[in-house]
Length: 149
Image (cartoon, rainbow, N blue to C red):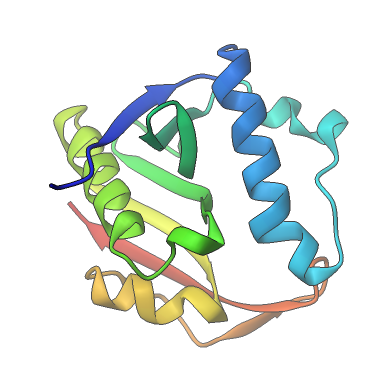
């Protein structure tokens, strides 16, 4: 029997999902590089749209989007729980988000991919905008990437 995952769209005002999203992001994106999320700095997310992949009511993957213009969006803070990585859940959530953005009238998407996620985005049709570069704030290597919808 196939496992039924539920895809959702939520906002930072949806306290339960937003708080779960922060815990997941901190565990997956920040702790491995010796950092923690600074909740007071997250006011910039107040207008972001968040997406999630749930099993029952547990958030397994999350992704945030904000508008750069009426037709261009930026994807940020993509995290999949480690015990569910490499099972297609990230791709499933990404496709859901890209379809939603296209339906909303966006024609392109950009993101900054960690070097460790670069191949994932290439497999999902994103293109490099330039060479690998170092983010001194997080002390990691990144790629600027884009996708036309």
